[in-house]
Image (cartoon, rainbow, N blue to C red):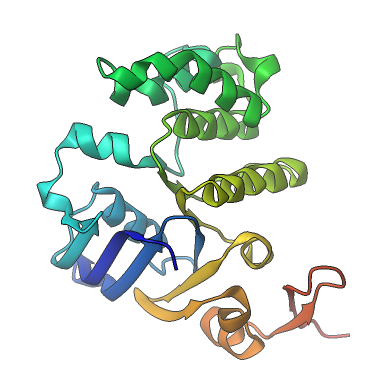
Amino acid sequence: MSATVAELRAVQVARGGRALLDGVDLTLHAGEVLAVLGPNGAGKSTLLGVLAGDLHPDSGEVLIDDRPLSDWRVGDLSRRRGVLLQENSTAFPFVVHEVVRMGRAPWRRTPRSEEDDEAVSEAISAADIGPLAERAVPTLSGGERARTAFARVIAGRTGMLLLDEPTAALDLGHQEALLSLARAHARSGDAVLVILHDLNLAAAFADRVLLLQEGRVAACGTPAEVLTETTVSTVYRTPVEVIPHPVTGRGIILPRRPM
């Protein structure tokens, strides 16, 4: 296993008397795609917010590169991890290439600012938004905005990507392309944590899966270890069957429907 770049230890988060995360442990390694799954309200976005430093846990530890998150300065942290949230609204009529360039802001006045033009161009191409580069963001479709937001994150070249449901607004082809690109970043040494609702995308692209249920870790391991008929049926309260893909052998999760 590659080096651990981020870690949660016994993290607790409660709001309004309800536990959103309850004793959660997590490790994220360089060179892997870790998919976080779970039903609605399981604590997925809360977990990402804690790991990103946007939410403070009530108890437990959060470590980035073996340093407590509280020891990180905001600027240093922004150069270490890129965060893609579910909501990516833009209040002002910036054009697409301007929004992507915002991903380079943490590197301003550093030697790596010399990479700005290359990083922006590469991100625009990778996210397949070249034809949109001069379009005002408010005129884009939901999927086009999502791809623009993803390009902004990868333009930062941070080495750690924290992605909250990046495929939710995308069509089939762009879902595959985005997760293929996330996996390519992992293969080049980045650490990628991605929240997904689609179990089959997780089964196809993740190296490991963390499954949450009511704020607790229900299972963590390889997709084959976690996405079993028994575990998925129990956590999602819906009977499923898992069949092997005819080419890759990875599991395909299907709901059991009456004939």
